[in-house]
Length: 502
Image 1 (spheres, rainbow, N blue to C red):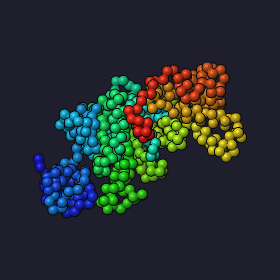
Image 2 (tube, one colour):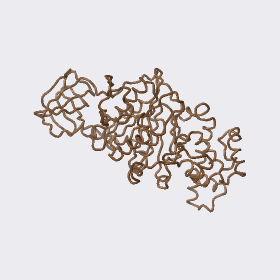
Image 3 (cartoon, rainbow, N blue to C red):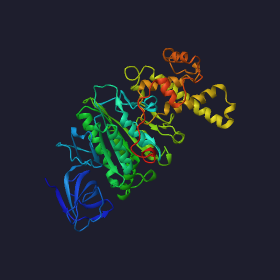
Image 4 (cartoon, rainbow, N blue to C red):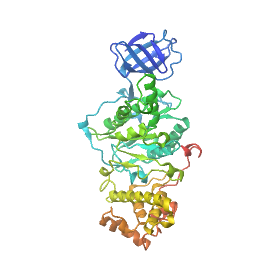
């Protein structure tokens, strides 16, 4: 069915065109703009007045003429074709297949803007998602239905970390379906190729839906890409009952595109030129995660954003932190010292961690071990600051033990191989080995029964406490004390200067 068509445009301003409005048109509806040769370009209504409509064109407006162009209002919002065939497919930022296999076989279309979820129907996020990364599983546990962003910086290995999470993330129950929706906005071609090569080579692509908006695509496309990805996730979670992990990178590119459109529309800027509705716009994406009572499925989000100048108070990470339930912060100092993943111990937190760990979910001692490791590492930071003033040789014997603990904690617990998949039991056992470096009387956050069950056998094995004999360097510690490593590191598909330095 054809919509209402108008001849001519009022004016063209970059990717936005102004034209007479149809009386039946609504905000967010899809529009077809045709030039004099009949070439069709898709756009979306982004603003309306009594007589005029502002249309955001997904692509270049080069070649459009105000006199000879035609506008056709299609009378429906932007939609994504959904179906079981989504898994294993690669789409562009607007949901069009780019893997050479054509559209999926389905007649089911969904509005990419989503539908609001009744708050009464939401269930509290619970249960544990294992990423295989000790810094996350042990200290900042990811919970099913949670929004847990990763705050990174330019040049940091957030792309490698994202690929590792997609490869390794799983739920411990084998009876439930777990899939990943991966969304990349404004990424370079070599980065996109790295992700696709990793997913294909490791065999996880069959359980992943990929949406890619490359850097050379119109920046306006980045505003639609995460909405398409979340629409696919909602279909898989709430219609098919799957547990879906949505990884979105890079949210900074999304916000830059939002600022660009806002400037073209002449809106009054807010902090650092971003529109005043940046908070509500981000919330419209982040709040599409969660669990609802009418479906066994769930949507868990890991948005990744690069902080300009590593500034965590920048509007993008600042507002994101208000909406989400915690954050994982990558530390540049750890990165420069060769620690991977360089997850900062103190600024990172998961506010829902307490509801997804413990007996029946991870292990009974998880909460106490995580709390003690956090407290001890906090003491390490204070001791290092003191040592920088008075010198390490002037520190007390206890403070020197904490310095030794901090070094071993960063090199053996936080740091792990890019292809090393640690179970939660391995992570917690490694945490206990870190605690053997401290006097027993310092472990005040752990119940006595857990000390007897987990710590005493380790001290007996060492023969004496606090000498570090269980830890023989990074590789030796893991192999000797934890058993054989869970798989040798595989070579990257790109050169070290390519994927290895993202």
